[in-house]
Length: 119
Image 1 (tube, rainbow, N blue to C red):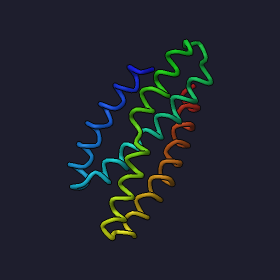
Image 2 (cartoon, rainbow, N blue to C red; image 1 turned 60 degrees about the vertical axis):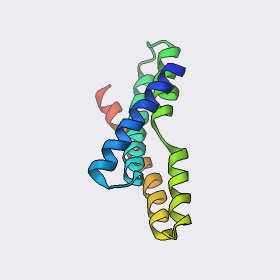
Image 3 (cartoon, helix red, strand yellow; image 1 turned 90 degrees about the horizontal axis):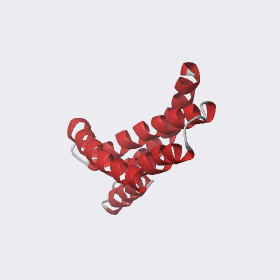
Image 4 (cartoon, rainbow, N blue to C red; image 1 turned 180 degrees about the vertical axis):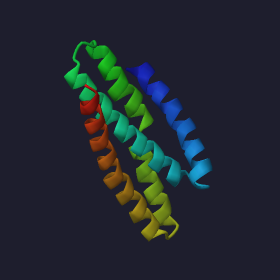
């Protein structure tokens, strides 16, 4: 699981930097992109693992808890919100937090639907 977490953290850093570069100059957009991608992937993989239980538990835990747990960024999301509020950007902080939660939930649901369609 630790190897999955380390790999997820490295992937998060790279994806966050790419998303921030292409979607906006700060990390808020990168955090959003990583959280949405991670939500979709967790919904997808968890559903596949439930419906195809032939994989060893260690592999399933490494992919979900380790890799995707290291990849998604709730602590970064929380800090982004604090940072924005500290600089007086209350509306932007609220929009960022709400968008990550609402769109993340939708992405996880789409991941479940996509997995069910493929199994």
